[in-house]
Amino acid sequence: MAICYFILASIAISLWAVFNSMGINENFLLILGIIVYLLCVLIIFWGRYAEGKGKLINLGNKLVRQELKPAEFIRHYEKLKNADDLVIKKLSVDVLRVALIAYDLLNDRENALATVDEMINVASDKKQNLAKLLKSSLLFSYGDNQAAEILFNEIQKQKLNIVCSGLVDVILKSDRAMARGDYKTAEVYHLNVLSRLFPKPDKIDMLISNYWLGEIYEKLQDTNKAIKHYQYCANFGGETAIKTSAIEKLQHIN
Image 1 (cartoon, one colour):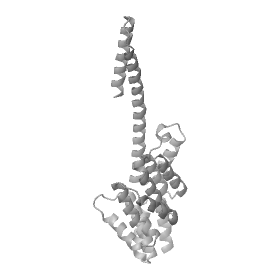
Image 2 (cartoon, one colour):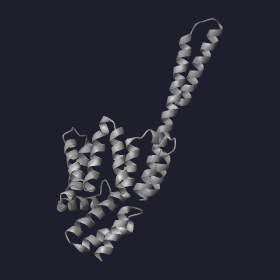
Image 3 (spheres, one colour):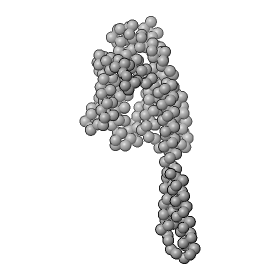
Image 4 (spheres, one colour):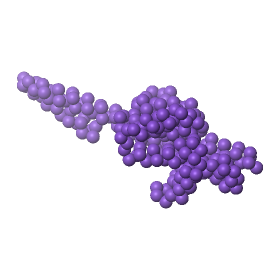
């Protein structure tokens, strides 16, 4: 695309030069050439941004979602933040969401909350509710129930798209249910996640649901079930804080 615009601009300016040498005033060709050159530069600029953003998101999905190595992704992400890189200087909700998941898997609450606040700041009107729902989910899971309830109730008054409506349902049955001590609702939800055929849960879904079930059964004093789910996290938790916490829980129970 950029090459086509470059050729078109070159032709326009060349024609202007020819006509000008013949004493024919065709300044519109010069103006057209300059405008097309500027469009060419803009296409290259945004192409580099889109390519860089895509690579960063793909790297995040690989390291965070597939390999459960959030710290490795964060090292790469924070290195780019300190460099003059367009992808990081112009933050997007999609990039920040990967970083948010990584910080949360490391139990880095300060950076997770700071990242979700950045998401809210840069989100378009269409994605504002999504970013705020993610923040309310974090607040519930971090024990700040009052702030979480205020934000969660505020968002539910808005007109929500299908993605946000689905996330509201998840928060109601998981984070909020746990925060309110409604362990039965949370248990049913997370058991359904583990047995879900479509969409099939990824490694993060499996890890988080197993950990929540471990906590639920520990609170309900069903030790055998708690051990089973904590053991999954200890075995398959990758390089996450969830794995570390699960190992500590198992040592405490035993």
